[in-house]
Image 1 (cartoon, rainbow, N blue to C red):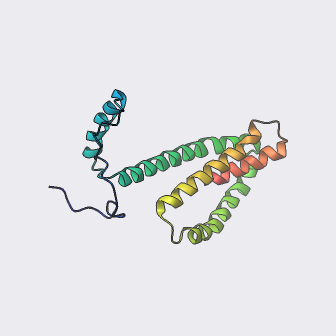
Image 2 (tube, rainbow, N blue to C red):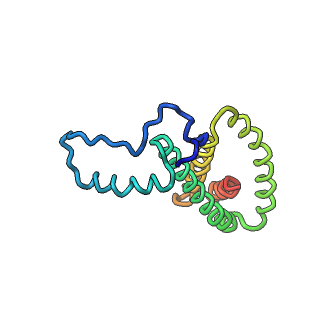
Image 3 (spheres, rainbow, N blue to C red):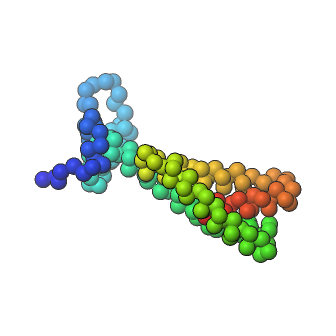
Length: 162
């Protein structure tokens, strides 16, 4: 016997069961689709996914976690190396204080923007914003940019990761 549905599974009453399929003869006898279904159905049941809505929530949260890890790994590893190469140790003090000020300023702004929104939506927006900042600020390193522009980009990448 299954337990009572948790809050996440009853967030929308019109959920369609994920494990329900139409076996009517619609002319689509694709063996690949059938074997994919036969492969996925037991896994979804085993991990407790009960509806298509829940499957999408799990998919999006897993994708966000993957993106957050990728941005974190890139920022943690690439940011300091680029910063030290382009700016040097003399700029590290400014970057650390600037990063602290940035955290103090953006905390309340993030709190204001997060009010009334789901955690998943805010997490997705934050990960996408950080990835965009790292991507845009990484552009000067692949173009023929002036040293000043490259140094500013190094500061931005270093602080965006924080």
